[in-house]
Length: 117
Image 1 (tube, rainbow, N blue to C red):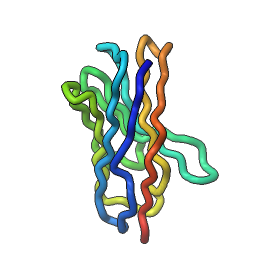
Image 2: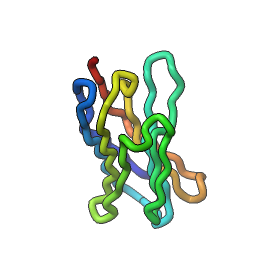
Image 3: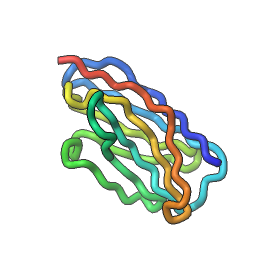
Image 4: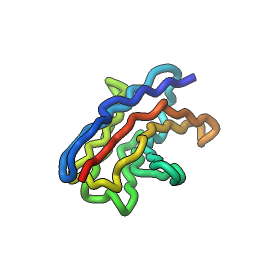
């Protein structure tokens, strides 16, 4: 089992910045992908950014150039640095870990990000 705990959400004005953290614990394999998803009211959950154990990253087009995902495997923590935030970035942000070729899939409880105009 793996546990994921997100933190760092909050209220910020447009053009501001926030850094989200996802702390992982439990049985974590060497090969994994950790991602940030978000879900706004009335919308489906969508992928924001992902990072593999080798450091390869992938971003949604809507956040590319503004958000940066990174990981610290010593601390077992993944970060999402969010800059130039927009009101449309308002959502609950979830951390996700997949391993064992996708056979194991874990979610955190989510953290609210609210961007005011």
